[in-house]
Structures are given as C-alpha cells and as structure tokens.
Amino acid sequence: MAGSGLAGMGARLGYGLGQAARVAWYAGQYAAAARIATEARRKIDFDGPVPGWQQMLQAMGDLFARDWQNVEAGIYPAPRRLMNPADALARAGDFFRDLPDVDRRRASDANSEVFTDDHRGRYPRYYLQNFHYQTGGYLSDDSARRYDHQVEVLFTGTADAMRRQALPPLKAALAGRDLRRARVLDVACGTGRFLGSLKQALPRLPAVGLDLSAPYLAEARRHLGRAGWLDLIEGNAEALPFEDGAFDAVTCIYLFHELPEKARARVAAELVRVTRPGGAVILVDSLQTGDVPAFDGLLEFFPAAFHEPYYRTYTRADLPALFTRAGAELRSSTPAFMSKVMVFEVAGKV
Image (cartoon, rainbow, N blue to C red; front, top):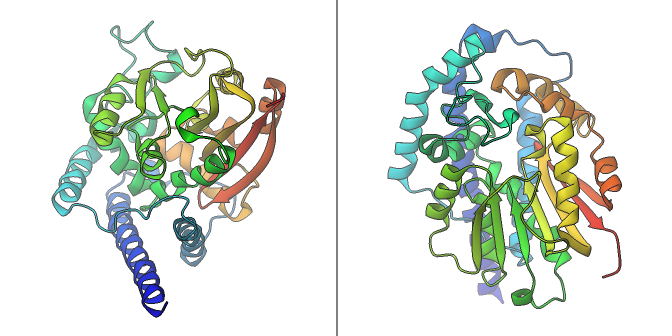
C-alpha cells in the first residue's frame, strides 16, 4: 500500500512538473511574440475586466487539477510528460519565422488572402478567411503543420487539457454500452488532437472525424498514425454526410465561435440530427460573456487581435436555445479555463 501511495505521489508530481514546463515553454513564446507585435495589436481597446496573472494562474491551476483528477479516476491516461525537444524547437522556429507575416496582416487587417479562384465555390465564403491572421487560413499544409503550436502559444500550453474535458461527459454518455458497438463523431476534428486523446482513452471505440480542410485531415492522419477503429472524412458540418441517429455521441470542439449566426444554427441542427435519441452532443468552445465575468475583457480583445470575425456574436449567442430548437436540451455547462464544456441530450426514447 505504501509503495502504491508513493507511486501515486510520483505520478502526480511528474504530471505537475510536466504541465508547468509546458506552460512556461508556451507562455515564454507568447510573451516574446507580444513584444514584437505591431502597434495595431497593442492599441486594441476593450471595456470589460481583465484578470491579473495571479487570477490567470489560479484558473490554469484549476484546469490542471481537474485534468489530473480525471487521470486518477481512470477516465483517460496521463498526457506525456515531456515534449520531444527537437520537434518542439523546430515548431517554435517555424512559428517565429511566420510571425512577421501574421503581424503584417494584423496591421493592415488583411484577412482574405485565401479567397481565391481555386477555393471559391468549393468552400463557404465565411471559411475563406485568414482566421487568426494565419498564413494559408485553414487551407494549406504549412498552416495545418503550424496550427497546434499557434493555439498552444495563444493558450499558454493549456489547449490540450481544455480539449480533454470533453472525455468525461463522453464516457458518461456511453456508460454501460459495449464500446465496440457504439459510434462517436468528432465534427471539425482539425488536426486530430482531441481524437488522439480519445483513442488513447478508448482505443476500441469506433470513431469518425470530419473536417472541411483536406490539409488538416492529412495532418490528422500523420498525428494519429496507426490508431484503429477510426475514419477521417472531408465534409461540411452544415450538411453532415450521415443518416439520422447514426452516432451515440457527437463532439464538436472550437468550431462554433468561427461560424456566422445562420451557419451556427444549421450546424447545431445537424449535430442533433445525426445523434441517436438519448445520445449526447458535447461542445467545447470559448467562454461566452458572463460565464466568468473577470475574463470578459479578454473576450473583447481576442477577436480584434486574432481576426475572429464571428466571435462577438458567438459570445452573446444563446446556444441552449439553438439546440432546443433542434431537439436537444442542455444538461450541463462547465467552465474550463478559457473554454467551457456544454453537454446536450438529444430528445426521444433511447
């Protein structure tokens, strides 16, 4: 028993040290990037309150504490303690080499470089933007390779931990079922970061990832490697290529804040349509205004600094009403640092 306790303490310490190193690595890059940012970013005005560093660190600590509790409860395995040093340095170098182009777009508000003849008609107009002012928008191999590092810098190393908070409600929604006969869909799966955590936790659960970007799906295939019981499909979340009730649960992570209002409603309806009666739709997305009042100023700063054209309407959107109209009811909404996890239950008999 004593050995078991020591092993547990060691695992907890290893987790804490690993996450602290991760936060320091990405926070250092955020600070360096901010120092070389143009005046266009420095002079953005906002009215809401902004948390101090102590408050931010406390919120991060709460996220990591919950993350570790989930590990100890056996909901998912502990994340890797250390990043591959060579890979981490290469990605950081690529991030900083691209930063002047990002800064140039911010200074001139150049946000439609991907609105080209090659892309028109193939993608929705709202998708053909340089979200985050990033090079290539969501439509280049370089962007797909760079994206996860950019997001971790933005969220100071907490993005993966926030994504993992979709796993507890997902496992709860599938409790008592033969997981080999269940089916889960991850909409807007991007480069597959959440799917990677899902397959580590539930390797024999059949899962489908769908995304509109072929380059991001290609990066997901590289990231997920030989993960089994997994299909990746190119498709539009506004018209999912699946039958009604095809999935026991659907996850959707960091999509809704990038959708205009009408598209947001269509996607909500589609998520509900493809989920079986009694099944769960699980969203992880940004906080909205009033969720954590101390962070409201950051929600004003973010869309102006990082080109998120539909973010302001998202922060005030009545998401429960969208899903109620589509046939699902909100069961829980839980903040997770700068994100929140919303769980909707689809109406009808199981």
